Length: 379
Image 1: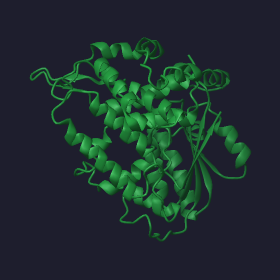
Image 2: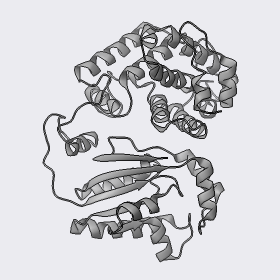
Image 3: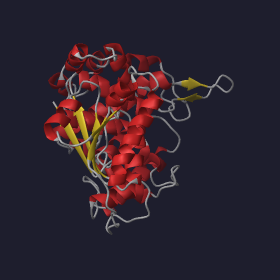
Image 4: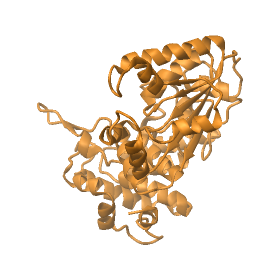
């Protein structure tokens, strides 16, 4: 299976989807046929029944029919895979019998990323699909009181830096139309209000503009600020933060582009401490962090070279850097699975290919708003 074959799953106008071909392309969806759902919100039954209804609803929507072919391919595959992880996240209360699938959106984005990576889907299209899956339910409640304590305006602005909001609203609408639930019109109205707010904010189909990158970074990290008014920026180090799976070429990239900069590296810390990969990682992290603090105190530029694979891992590093007023450029590198394993097998490392592949379940690509600049170097 490859990208051209996946594109053929998206039916031309007026034709029905070939669901058997969809199941053949993504075998994990077979499990959706036996995955139950909360009957209050999904009286239609199992996850696969819901998925087919969502896809069919999407194809019937005027907004979908008016979209470009490239947009149709992205939102079709996002709809097909939006609940792909419900099979692995289903929890049934032993007392009440209540059914839930906590975290299925985030897990679904990870599952989709791995499958689409192995099918060599172009990076930009793949990540748009995965990001849509990750936030596909947000428009349902974006205008209600946020669980994170943020305003609807913040939510819309933040989403505009992750996904194409018209496609997100299209997917959310199809998700509601493709189910049997109480008062669907109330949620459809909420989605339409979500669209209107995005239009008012100037981010319906584009990112919300910010007066400068520093204000944007501070705003999305919780500072009391407005996108149109600049915040004062204190002087600090310029730091390049590397991100990517092991053997993706981070060391080579640093040597080529910044050979004179100091490097903070977990691998170097392990060597200095005489530790193998996966042993005493806390000690390794403390060693690298102290080296970074020394450079940050001096205001010197440097490279922080680590996998920084999950958002949580990056956040720990970014918290430290922003505490010292650093200007951060995130550089993400990627290779196909076969090439990663080939390279890793040739390296003198204690990280086996089996352990490397286990890291895929924490594989979250940096988002554009995480740093002052984010560069994707993808082969």
